[in-house]
Image 1 (cartoon, rainbow, N blue to C red):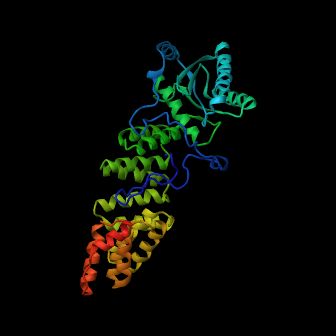
Image 2: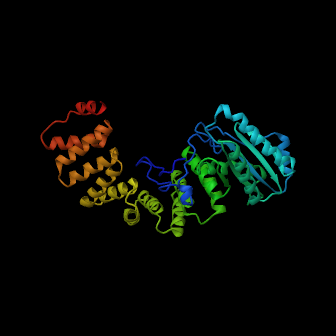
Image 3: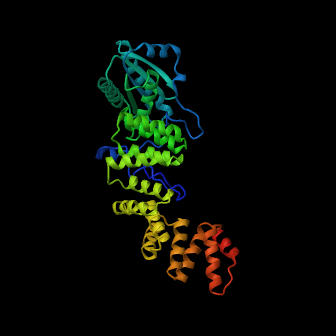
Length: 388
């Protein structure tokens, strides 16, 4: 999921993907922590489509050791940013000393994976013991240094994941840990996959996002947010049947989830079922009056239904939530036209042109209004004024 705000900035992309606030925190203490601003995302690929980390960067001898293990826990370890060049070497020495200690006592092997990322395989060790070792390592580092390390942990076997996939899963847990600030640990779980899916979603890779969300549901089928996120991906691929199934699954688990109600309403709008959409959007609005998309779409629907007075109230509310929304201002202008509030309507359309000088619906509406008043509309002064 990365920013913790709702992932929709355009009315042309109406579905809501991420809930308000952080979906990755479970306690008040967690809510106080912030993701590291320059944390490397180990999975999935970056904005340029290049995978930062994979098992291809691990030498054959180490991978052979991994494949011989019938069970293990794996730690992905990173030096927390920002890195101080003057203190990096001593910190690395401290970390290597701890990893050597683990290896020399026959508990596993460690290796430099890539860049600041290290891996440690703990053969035949369960996840809770691995977590204990991780916390002891962090404690020992913090006693000697101001710098910190974060650790993602995964176990094998775990569900249907292969040994190689388990190493990558630890990196997903590391991305998960980054949301809790420096010196954090996270055990790979459905939330790790949810975050990984969100990262794919942000890069526009719907297929891999879908794969991550489905894997997350394999671990936790009762997570309504993951069902909703899967539904949004399906909708973006124009698979409205599967999108509806996912949104309905989310609502079975959480009937009062305004995001899933809203998204299901949008599916009905796309299927030309405005009455069904209205019921869902109205309920979503009753639960959440602070989300622009919910307020805007409900106002737009009411405008189309001819309920101009109520539409005006909602469209004004949506503009209060997003002041520079040209579509919302344009709809408000159209609504004011229907209410015969000509001066207010012209004012609304002029605001649209100021935001977006070439916004055709506003220019057209202004032309109609000026013609009705027996005046001519010279759009060039408006456009020039807006561009200043």
